[in-house]
Image (tube, rainbow, N blue to C red):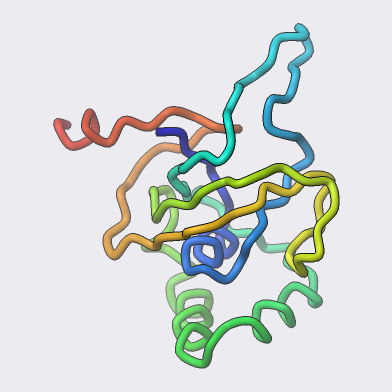
Length: 150
């Protein structure tokens, strides 16, 4: 199954069911300099959500307000404790869940949409136990059966 690396806190917000779009400056099926398509993907497609090792430190205040307005009280408590106490440490450099990518749009009513392109998301799952895994740029193949053998 394919995976996509996403910085925290966005990866956690996606897998927890709060963020319904992932912003990118490229569309699914992009062409690279050689003219070849970097990857192809039929939609909808289930993917692993990989939380990169970096936390997004440049979150605009309007996004902080959006996070605060969308989360339940319990989710806010968990979110801000993770952000303050551990810096999302248990959720860095690991596969933390799964989600369906249902489309790739250039416009959206979602308050989370701020990019040139947005991958629309559905059916998120946050794993109880993260799976340490090295990320890559773009979509990449993950074989958890191979990982389990290591």
